Amino acid sequence: MPTANVNTKTKQPTYSADMVRTYLHEIGRVPLLTHEQEIIYGKQVQTMMSLLEKKEELAQNLGKEPSLQEWAKEVNMEEKTPQKSPGTRRTG
Image 1 (spheres, helix red, strand yellow):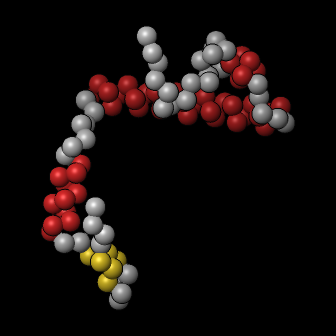
Image 2 (cartoon, one colour; image 1 turned 135 degrees about the horizontal axis):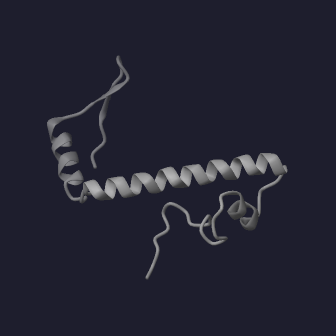
């Protein structure tokens, strides 16, 4: 993608219409989420944030990084559930 010219007086980039057109063309190639996907992913992010917050609280209370077993017990989940990261996809 072309770079923007920087106006030295204002230190803000100035964009040409061609650059905007290129940007709009590029983002048009990426499929958008459906309403249902936005809701599902939003809830997953909120859940992960809550789990990570509990993990941080537990680490402070224990004075060390909690084990997976300690973390799972704290959030009342099976041991394997908390280790899933937000970018990990389930298979099967």
